[in-house]
Image (cartoon, rainbow, N blue to C red):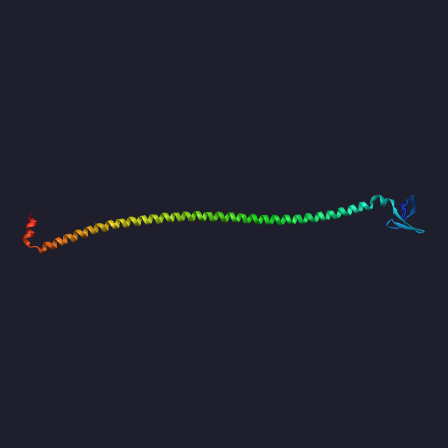
Length: 174
C-alpha cells in the first residue's frame, strides 16, 4: 500500500521541505525516520486534512461542556421537582388551613347562634318567671288584704262578744 505523506522537519530555524513520497507500513499511518541527526515525522495527508489538533481540542471542549450542561440540566430538573413537591405540600397546607378556618368560622357562627338562642331562651324564661313572681306578689297582696279583713272582722266579733247582748241587738236593728 502506497500513500503520499508530508514530511515535517523539526529544526531550529524551522525550514519547510517539499513533500516526499514514501511507503507506509504502519497501521496508525504514522512513521518516523531518522536521517543523520534530524528526526522527521511522517504524517499522512489524509489524516492531517480531516482532523487537525485544534479541531480535536475544540471537539473535546465541546464534549466536556455538553457533559457539564447535561449535569447542570439534570440538577436543575431535580431542584425543580423538589420545588414542585414543596409547592404542592405548601398548597395542601394552605388548603387545609382554609378548610379548618372555614370550619372554625362555621362553629363560631353556630355557637354564636346557639349562644344567642340560649340567651333568648334564658331571657324568655326569666321574663316568664318574673311574670309568675309578679302574679304571685299580686296574689300575696290579695291574700294579705283578705287576712287583714279577716283579722279585722275577727277583732270586731271579739269586741262584740265582749259587749252585752242588748247593745249588739240595737246595732243589729239599726
